[in-house]
Amino acid sequence: MAVSAIARHVYQEHLDYFGEPDESFVYENKNAPADYPDRMDIFVWKASADVPITTFSTIGMATRPMAGAEHRAELHFSVRGSIDKATLGQGSMFLANLAMHPFIGGTHFDWWHKVRDPGAIPLYSRASSVIFHPRFVDTGWDAMQFDSTPIKILNVVPITPDEYAIQEISKLQDHWMNIEVDLFEPR
Image (cartoon, rainbow, N blue to C red; front, side, top):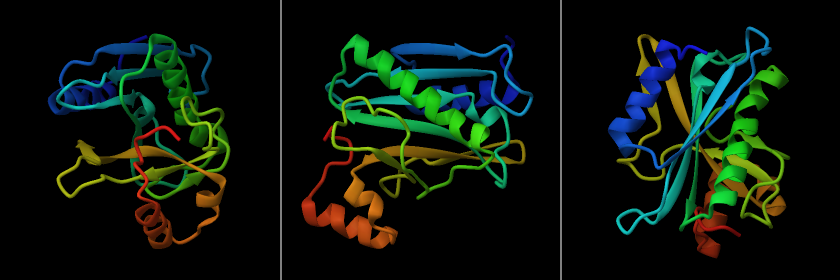
């Protein structure tokens, strides 16, 4: 399948930000409805001595608009430490499936939205939901632009059932601070 201009742009932005990926996975659906992405690439940047976090990224989610949103999106899922080959495959499948959720459900994802049951989250035995976090630091990366189309980067953070129940984002952030949680550490 041909790669769209928006997907090429998103990929180039990732290359500029992270460098060449260490792994890639491709999921294609030649029979996808016209309003669904028909290809989802998952690129992985493995943990290193300089950056002790493995990061998965979708490239392809932004190729289609989400219902009710002015923006498009791509997902990042970051885990502290090195990950074995089998778990890399599980992580890529998890992220590809999660990226399809707004299209299947006729909805959209945005920062601070939660998904109650996104499927089994690799490495996170206590987490059963996710929340989409904007950039973690002021100098972080959480948006890009393609022509006049804003594209948000939604950082997938696995959360526990108790954390899912906390409605106010400020209270959830206070909770994380109080328990001194590392949002990248499997738990």
